[in-house]
Length: 246
Image 1 (cartoon, rainbow, N blue to C red):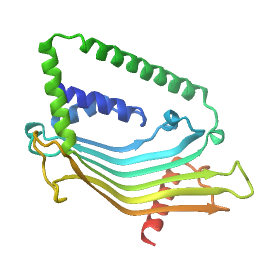
Image 2 (image 1 turned 90 degrees about the horizontal axis):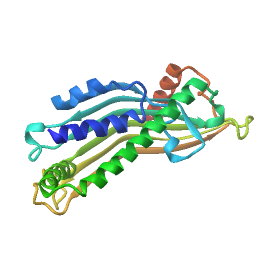
Image 3 (image 1 turned 30 degrees about the vertical axis):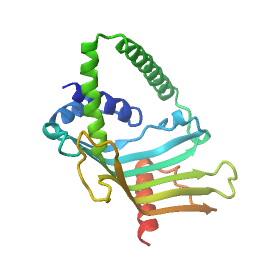
Image 4 (image 1 turned 90 degrees about the vertical axis):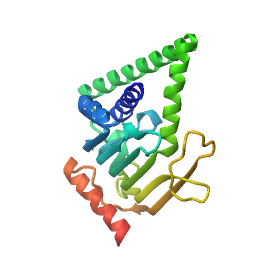
């Protein structure tokens, strides 16, 4: 199906831009089967590069990403996306030791990404000049995509994003961050009751839920970014539990 290919390309591009060593073949197989499960994804050091900020990811992990796609009932069932465990430790770019090989790889990835954008722009321009028959095919795919978005359910749990800085003032290291137990988004009717919208629905209601959002700022803070990747993730999880439950 055209839509299956669209989903595969979209996930490959989006997830591949932010995580290391994504197995694209397994991702494609999962999409066609209607059940994608990716675990322990390592976040790339340059995951924040598109934001044009002077920070890098020292350590980051997505615990589990699940995508359930009811291919046989896309008009009557919801696509459900679940992300459990997002941990990031962000530091000033100057604290990361320069790695020529890694930097070259990231530059090549950036070039490939730019080439993809150019190709997509050319394809969009070509589609505008397609015969009407092809336009109808595109319209079907677009309608299907719109229907999926209408009923998409999203749930993100156990988020901890932490920033550490011992460069600005080495005598008084600073750490700050946010933790979030759960963020969810569900389609509802006008009475905020969960439902599946049909193709004719013109107004979309989404109910969002935010649970245990916390923020912290510490001066003279312990610094963890100098530890191993595993030690950093253990620390990240322990801080999350402390902020949420203590």
